[in-house]
Amino acid sequence: MDTPTKRILIVEDEPDIVRGLRDALEFEGFEAISTGEGRVGVGLARDPGADCVILDLQLPDINGYQVCEEIRAANPLVPIIILTARAQESDKIRGLDAGADDYVTKPFSVGELLARIKAIFRRLQRPPALHDEVLQIGACEIDLKKHTLTRARRSQPLSFYEVELLKLLAERAEQPVSRDEILDKIWGLQAYPSNRTVDNFIVKLRKKMEENHKEPRHILTVYGLGYKLVP
Ligand code: CA
Image: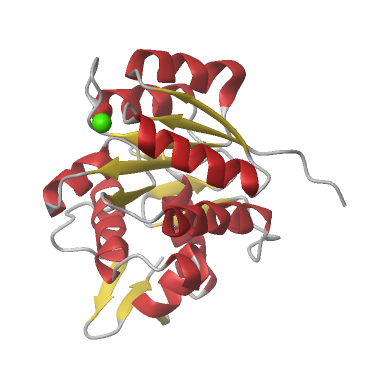
């Protein structure tokens, strides 16, 4: 069965990294397009478009967070992986807030990044376990097809991983799901990011969904294990 070639957009100004990534992606059968400028990257994400974006946060022309926001605004569904040289947790959270789905800290191995990309596409191809297209969680309506969350008549976009995480928790509503299982099922064993990745996504989702994200009523922490969804 032929699947169409996936196009990966690389927005990065360091030629060595771009070359290494392009070679590895093309070797794996992906099409790779690249630019060293954020502005051009926003344009390429629109035309010819991309199935996944790898975005460096430190670009010569415009701030990478802004590039991320603009790509996300134009395309709510495309998975965006940011590259950050900054080790600080707050920068990663800021990147996730700007609409990124995942991050890789420099220096990274090309193999690790490839594993993340493949995990994303594997997830996208997996048949849905949930047949509902809309989840009702508390006062929120989550459209799993359109990737939107509507609360108090305000609709906001959800990223790829946010939707996948909600689907997994909803499939097992009222039961605890461990961080390890979340990492395994959503990010894929080979792509293992840290447990903090899951926690960062939970923080983001709570801010979007909960009345008071510091006292969550729908996405509960199960201490020492993981999380539980209470619709
Ligand atoms: Ca850079």
